[in-house]
Image (cartoon, rainbow, N blue to C red):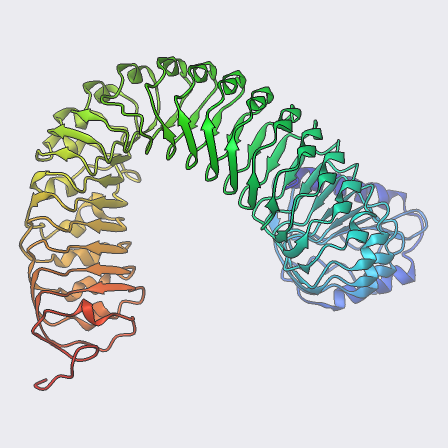
Length: 640
């Protein structure tokens, strides 16, 4: 959970200015001593946030970030590492520890030492003496240790953020139940453990509660249902188990619910219908099972519904069609069955519909053609048995169309040539025929996956017009013709430079042209997979110019000649697979000692000589069937 930095800064600056104007007495000596001791424990202050804190000046009138009341007692200490104004943003840090003397600031109401990045050590127990404290911001530092029991004396606390530190241990129940005035509580991004205290149900004033990114275990306390003012609840990225309690339906004011990345089990309770203010709901990455309750259709304000990566079963409730405010549905990787309800056609604001990796079947409802706002449609890995892509798909204006493994047959429909699709995945189907010349008209394509189909043509010359294409996967087809037509594709700098190419398991021919590494489309490629084609020729030296290349796979491609030393100039290479070719000569030392190299295989070639000393752990199988190779991990050399 994040609070608006501008809003926080404005309120604190207003309080600071008002308090300074109201001050009429010199700074109290106890408060001066406490602040000077805090400064003394700061070991590095590069932006001089504490430069004005001098013994010779008055802390109420001359010290930046300090404000006093009319009696000269300090009420506000605000020296955050991130400050913003109308025309500036200051981002800095301070190193050091928190002084226990801060506990002597008995009139302090606001303490903001957030975003200083390098405050270390424990939260002093003495801070518990700050009985008038209303705002405590220590987030985004490196504080360690546990939450002190003494913080239970914060009876007037309204907002507290300890997020993004290294705080560990349990949250003491007696501490939690004392914060009855708190409206915002942020403990996220720490190493807190144990169960969420059941006393959390006593925080009846809380509107924002963020506990995500810790190690909390146990169940969600039923007492959450008492938090009638709660608008923001984030318990994600923990190890919470058990069921979602029925009492959660009592959170009528809740607008955001994040329970994702836990170990929740059981059904989604029907009481979820009580969350009639909810806008964002994310319960993904759990072990939830059972069918969706039809009452989910009563969440009239919900815009994002994210339930992916669970074990949900049954049919999709037709009542979801009542959720006309929905913009995003993410239901992938569950066990939903049956047809997609025709009522989904009522979701006119829907932008994303992801039902991939389920067990949905039956004819797609043509009512989906009404979804004119839809930008991303993913029905991949469902046994829907499409046969052919329905013609009403051309009425959609989607940018992403993913229909992998949906039993599509025949040729690509011509209407795709005039579509606005940017990401197209039709892999794992039974498409056949030629890759049509009009593919070059799909100039908005940035991602194209036609792998695992039955295409059997060469790549048409018009392919060069795909100047925005960055990811191409054509593996496991029967494509033929010269491979270099793909590498010669046009670009629209800075877009259209390949990120990945997979042409493996086809019938492409070569050789790979010598200047492949100098082609504009290849300048920033990270993965090049050409295995199991009839390329022949030698490995071009210019591949070394591909400075961002990480994966190079050229297994069984008929390569001959030597491994060029220039390949070692591609410093990011982590995978080099060149097995089952006709490569000769020695293994270049610079190549086998690439810093990022994790996987290397040159087996079944005609290489000779001593295997250079290398740091990467490479198995003996990666060098086998090269009669002329010797040296670790093969038998020792006798003639070199």
